[in-house]
Length: 185
Length: 174
Image 1 (cartoon, one colour):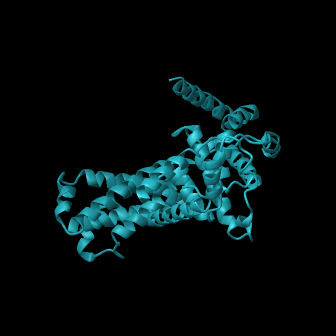
Image 2: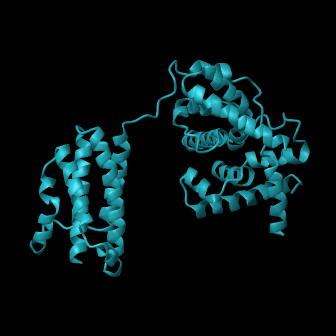
Image 3: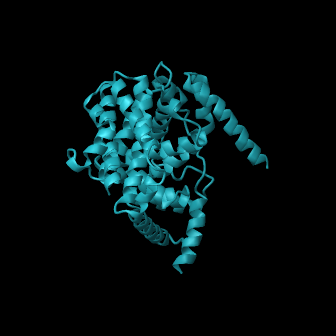
């Protein structure tokens, strides 16, 4: 119940701050950043395969894009939903661009061991997810972690729905193999 | 086995959907990159939306119903009854008058005229095209009243009116 109230309060606060920020109020935009940065960081970090430096770049880029597009936000969805989608879109654009950069996904996620809230078992899972090929990882993160539908994923990634399903199947297979290789799963 | 494994795996994956506080405060870096001005305004001239809509609809209508080239002599009475003559003019007032004339002409048709289309070859497509073109024309007319000097709008209005006339003509003779 308390959580419902918090969500409503947060959405109300967002509405006020979005309006102010859209008119150029930077402190209002900072409040939006403070309220949403952890969630945005979480999703882009997962999509970036746990590479912290890239995740931080993506957080910055997401909020800069949000600032530029705030006036276009019409309140048809929650601000948090709009921002989440913008973050995913930013991360996927980076993923597409990174395909032309040499060896970007060879970079190992350097800080997967730094979060104490994921001891042992789940840490292996995070590592296994991070080690997936970028597109397969994106589909798995969006579907199995963020709860998106295949149609939404396909549209965002510019692929057919069937391809999204096939990528998910492949990602799960790879994930299982990697977990079994570590003695979990 | 796979299902069970997948269920367990999926449950664990959902558990990873957590917020992740930033290890460093990125706000100063973001603030430094914010332009000094307010976010870009979304306000655009109304006609840009109408023009975009009309372009889409005109293409859709052309796809649904390939239009004839040039007037068919057998249809001369109808073509004359409609404002075809106006379509050669391209000033906003003339185009808007042509649009009004089309509406007036349609209002004078027997009520069942368009309903009868459903039973005729291509009738369903004609009705769909007419509906889309009418929506486009309404938007274009509104936009032209605001921006009568826009060449793009006049061209789109001209083109869309031509398609609308052709559909009426085809419906009459089908």
